[in-house]
Length: 317
Image (cartoon, rainbow, N blue to C red; front, side, top):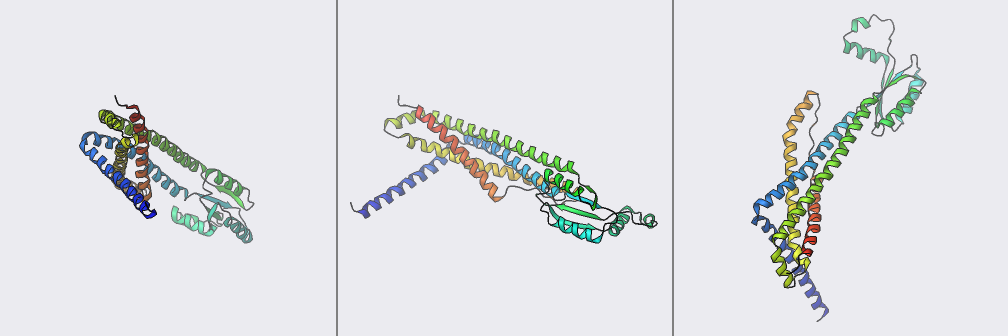
């Protein structure tokens, strides 16, 4: 046979290989329809088991979003010494602006501070009787992302106390530390719950395919008697596991979407009570694809382990 003929034969074999795989792929989907009750129950368990870690992830995602919004408001207030000169103010402001832990520096003069205080407190008439302005000049330091970490903020606060022109510096460190601790605890809890639930997915798929193999035990023995390889016998069961993963992942995505939609109005109404425009975040496109991919890979992993193990154990009688 010529080289061209070998190439044609190879292409035909390759085409038949993929055609056979596609045929078994859709034939395995038909197998799910032939046992609708058990298939639906398995898919429902997979969907709920995958929707729970996805929902926990959405909870963590929104908690981190709220945390970033709150941390972005982290500020250090520098109350300057009385009688600080203009040159000292300019020098301090320039040095503060160059620090990477500080995002923005806002200067409030004593006159502006007195005007803001009198307007807010309603003591304009009483304050007008004062001969001198008792309020100091103030620098408001908005912290950058690197400066919002509790350790970095505490170190920066100590540096500010050491400035000669600074009388005192104020930062509520407690709420930063508490907020960071709550988010870290939530993150660890989400990881732990996800591991347990994903392990449940592996066990469900593995046990379901084990039962399917045992129900087809006599057919498998006959196929082995006529010379069928283990790989050929395993293929339909692996495709069933693939469909379990795909459909279960889609169900989990839909359940998560429904949960976010159901809670979004309540969350928006609650945020409005605090004068916030916060909206509940759901799964993005990339995150949805990761959910579907994770479901498919887990199902394939479980089905591969279960199918190979149990089919090898079946021998012709």
